[in-house]
Length: 532
Ligand code: NOJ
Image 1 (tube, rainbow, N blue to C red):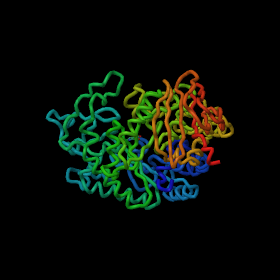
Image 2: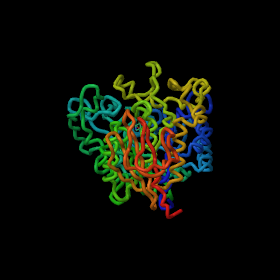
Image 3: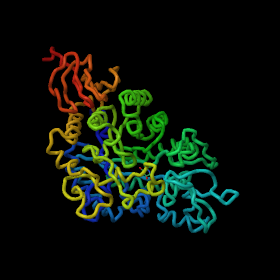
Image 4: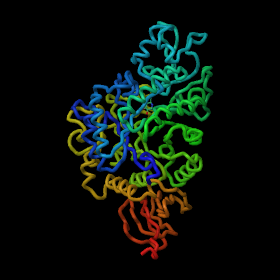
């Protein structure tokens, strides 16, 4: 295990700062709240916590629109509180990863405010400007991911500026070396403070075609999908130059020992793996969305895992996630009872897992009444099911009002069912999902084969996913029954270390194992009798 970095061995927990714990009673989560809950994270047994943006922001995109990259928004606390949080996390053996948002700033950022002063402004070229098309409209057909054109006219200077997301989030010009230098200083600011890693937001968007060519139509578009998906974003994302850029960002991280660079990437898996760099000089963990996008069946998931393993460069370390603050929660995407299978999958596939807060309880997407909608995606593109409020509802700590999240009115409504789905109740229940997550996390620590071992997919009956993890001669077999009926899995020997339903644990299996619907298990190879 010592040959592996902490971010290879460990498990990352992603929280959403507005929704994890409110420490000051204003209904919005904050640093004081996170500090109160560090003991929970240590008890759960994760290794690192990823905190999405906590920087000063007008909150048009809830923190992904930043006005000062080197400070803390008063809504969340102060820099001194952040330093205290970091120290307290480290005391508990928890690492801290922050979001780093290089693609854009807030339109209220002093750089952009300066850029608006005129075509000769010092920061004008820090952003992406273009003259109107011949008809006075936007320079080309590029569309924003949050609805509408990706260009907004600045009437005072007569030019359009580009924004991949909201018009309040102007895109930075990464071809300008001054931008690269300034953002490297931002990274150093946090790395100097002792932050253990950075998650690059919107990595694949960083560079756009310099000729501003129109994006071609995407023939797979159909009614019901957001309008920007009518276009294939070939000239606005995953441009070849992004590869060079991520290597430069990696060099900054490499100025510090033992830090991790994670990259957000929604791309086909063969493109995701390109972000490791040609020699491992790119992103440590280019995030894959395979378990978020794959149909929930043994064949699809097994094929996705095998293909990913086959595509990984020799120096590439895999990673997995079931969800995040942008995607519907896993509990609602799988059949009832399959949250347990999902937990087993996430924590036993080879690679670094990221666990989204509340998924360890089986939290479900909240119902958001129209008057409570906060997410700009839902506001701009209503009814398409892309709104992200449902997966950002307050963490469910107990069955008290507001689920123990806040004494004040929570910024988003608490999801239904919190009276039974909460930490306090599940902590006390040996059969709960939370207990299962905790046991799996403990087993990963105890069994290097699970944390860092080799992966080998294995043939299995229909609806069964089976794979082996092996390290230093210790071989574990993982079997998962996706069927709605019990299945006997032939050709299995060894001791049952864990079952997602707590069945047969400690029992030695001679030739086959019966799995109930939605049950999964981990078996250790039969101990060598000669070894005593
Ligand atoms: C990706 C982030 O995860 C998402 O929440 C955000 O809205 C966009 N990037 C824009 O920053």
